[in-house]
Every structure is written in C-alpha cells, then in structure tokens.
Image 1 (spheres, rainbow, N blue to C red):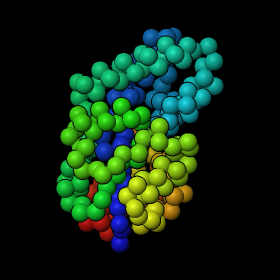
Image 2 (image 1 turned 180 degrees about the horizontal axis):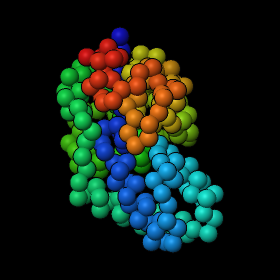
Image 3 (image 1 turned 90 degrees about the vertical axis):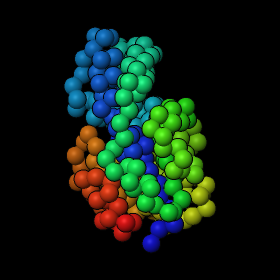
Length: 208
C-alpha cells in the first residue's frame, strides 16, 4: 500500500512541545510579556520566521533577539534534562520494513540532537530540516523533498503528523496523512485518519 513512511519530529516522535511551551512562557515572562497557553499553541508547527512574525505582531516592543536567546537556552536545558518519546514510537519503528524519513521544521543541529538523545537516528534513511527547503510547512516542499530523497512517489508515502500545519503540508504533497494531535485538538481537516496514538493510526492506515 505504501513505499515509504515519513514522520514529523516534534510532537509526533518526541514530546518536545510541552518543553517548548514551558520554556517559551518563562522567556516571555522574564521579558515582561507573559502569555497564556493559547498563545503558545499558535506557534506549534511553525518554523522560526513564521513564529517570529506572530510574536512581533502581538508584541511589537519585545526584543525578539533576547527572547530567542532565553527561549533557546530554556528549551536546551529541558531537552538535556528529559526528552521523552511519544507512546508507541519504538514499537512502530521496529515494525516498519519500509524506508523511513523525518520531515521537520527544526534546524539541522536541533533535529540531530533530538534524534541522538532518543536513539532514533538509526531508524531513518534521511532527515529533511528547515535549511533544506525554501518554503517550509504548510508548503508541501519538505515532504516532496523527502519522497525524492527516498526515490518514491509522494502519493505512495504515509505521513504521521501532529499539527494542522504539518498535516496540510503532507496533504498538499499528495501523501496519505495520519494525524495524532499533540497539544492542540483538531478535527483533522487535512488528515485521512485522526488517531489518539501512533500505533492506532498505523492500524487505521493499514500499515500494521
């Protein structure tokens, strides 16, 4: 049914969204701009420039350079202390015999660090990061590039995503999309299947 399986990273394979949320809220508060969880959720699935545009529009007086430094330091400390993987990740990856790739809006260094910390690098033939594409998610480019690197048609790829932004990108690329919501509930407007966890989603999609 499929020729390859593509995975988002943050919120899909590794449970980084809660770490990012906590570090971001702490950074905002430290600079005198406290925000609630709803605002942090508006940044989920966005690449760096898109997140900065949202932040600058809401807080034009915020020192974005200082904020990024604080957020990055807080997030890095959280990663080092504890980076859990999502339920069913190891079981699913061990059961897949097809080529797999990670497709993430993280930078190359961050993505490599997260995969190394969780010992997941060995499961993937390639990792597409933000530096690899001109247009990030929700554009289809990252998934199209992953399919190209694996030598398969995107229409023969199964994608696991957590956010609407990522699901839209995969949908626009022509992939079959399983969405496993993380911090934000969704009706799955761009997903073929919406599941409570990865293993259930894999079964729904006929992968297992």
